[in-house]
Length: 195
Image 1 (cartoon, rainbow, N blue to C red):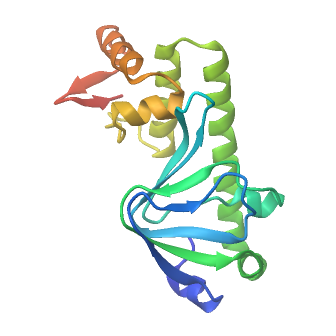
Image 2: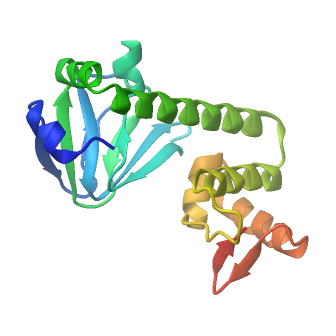
């Protein structure tokens, strides 16, 4: 999202996180901007029953954990490296200086945060009132819409990841996807889901 040379110019550093290493914990103070050079990160909360509820998956080129920087609140979720990941870190103060001197980058962040807010609102509504099939379709249509594709879209998530993102059990996701395939709301080709 932010060009690497710009991150370096504002004092950013590249840090390597091994697989399954926590980057920050829910409830910690937000002091850094994070951007993935290589790897994958998930942000999640743990329920009282010990089940993960995944807030999002982030890959190379993505940033994560910015809202607490803007809102001056603590991290609302834990971030974990899913594989060995190289992540740029930029102090909060340097991040804001960068945004003030690069309004085009600032605008990109405004748009990104708005998209994430819409996604959170959709998922909150889905989890509270709709059946599994509706929750899954809403998630998949959101993913397809964020890629700006009109044609068939291969869903880049496993059944487990869909479960984590919708708050459903994996078994429920599997049954719901089969039901959606029968109703022709989606297709399964070589075990991959297409919408």
